[in-house]
Image (cartoon, rainbow, N blue to C red; front, side):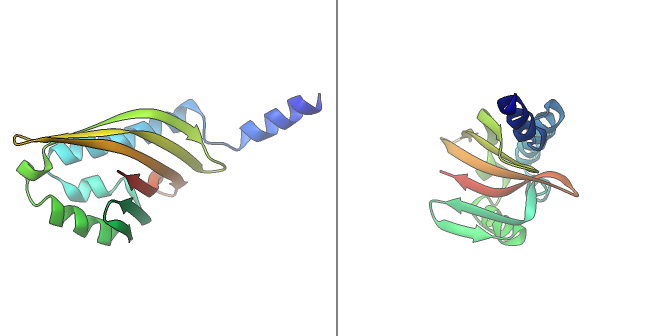
Length: 136
């Protein structure tokens, strides 16, 4: 009986509902669409204001700073190409948080890039947003 109560308590506060998972996946799908349209501003709306992006070149924090890096590295639609995400795991990570891992692929006319990612999501007043992005 105690085990049942502990399991019930541990599941009650986690963002693992079907609605939460669908909302998170919709933000990621919105980011794909925005990227494919060359709209970095819309793409960035999937990030929390206090996001930190960790990549090969180090750590950048703040939505504006991360946006500047994207604009510098992807100055036009040809450089941006078409982006695809593949989610491999989406798990609750405590009250109002979720953890996602997956793969990304960027198809351009001159090349195709790809790698993996891990994202820490936070549910706030704007809905689910990416708080930490580790892309490799």
